[in-house]
Image (cartoon, rainbow, N blue to C red; front, side, top):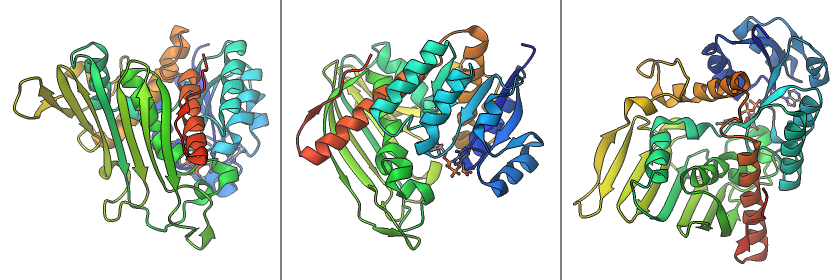
Length: 361
Ligand SMILES: NC(=O)c1ccc[n+]([C@@H]2O[C@H](COP(=O)([O-])OP(=O)(O)OC[C@H]3O[C@@H](n4cnc5c(N)ncnc54)[C@H](O)[C@@H]3O)[C@@H](O)[C@H]2O)c1
């Protein structure tokens, strides 16, 4: 194929914020079609991108020969039907997180994409933060020694604002758990490998958001054991009053190992803090040049807002994997692994006990 034709299925917030500029970094790819069930959103996306092929039904998009790959950026409840249809049509698929409504659905999506021989990727965007990528390298290469603890906090202030489909169980499945903690569960896996068991609690403090009922969690906390022996403590909330939201609110994570500790904050994406065994405290370390962009990305890390621009590298990874005929990182399998932890988190909250993470692949 001369150029990889890509369609956006779901052309709302994240499609325009992350994936359109991400694809613009890839000369080998071209955005050729837009799909959205909301005509006003479709029109806005068409005006923003200049793409004239617009569709209300994803089935029409999947019939097109000029569409080789799709980016699924719809609310969670339609990820599975779209992904299964896209795999059946032989299209490569980048799907937003959380991959599915439950583990069963996520497994079916992974198996369908594998059986179809297409590239598949889950949009765990925050792996692409330079500081997180570097921290993963330090942890995995043993520079911190044997890990003891992993810690993650995502604290935002959404007060009682409307969250649209995100506050409705039948459209989103879970609230803060899938929306924000799913990324941090993936961090844990990215840094330390699989979680094996969890104990957790979910809470909803706000029942009405923007005049509409909310039937989902706005706070979640969990303890985890990792396969390698480390412990994890993760907490995520939409109700950290006064902390703000988005990239400038708190996204923190820390690993403590026998030889050192590493600390990451999203609002400082080009640095980490390092502590060394025998040292007297944390010191700030700049992320080395080779970690400032994802391998293969032509992005200049000195341009733009660094809290936004790293997000574009996930589309570079998707397109590179298609060209190189290799698995995407992170793939649907990573999405399945996070979904398995989420399943255990929900069961632990229901049963009020530790729950083993279901074994997947
Ligand atoms: N990776 C990240 O950092 C990140 C950030 C935000 C959102 N997300 C995920 O991206 C997805 C979309 O979130 P968003 O914030 O862009 O939501 P959004 O509501 O802004 O956009 C979703 C769009 O999908 C459209 N849609 C709904 N059903 C459809 C269908 N059957 N076919 C085509 N289009 C349909 C809606 O009309 C809407 O325009 C969610 O899964 C969310 O969890 C990921």
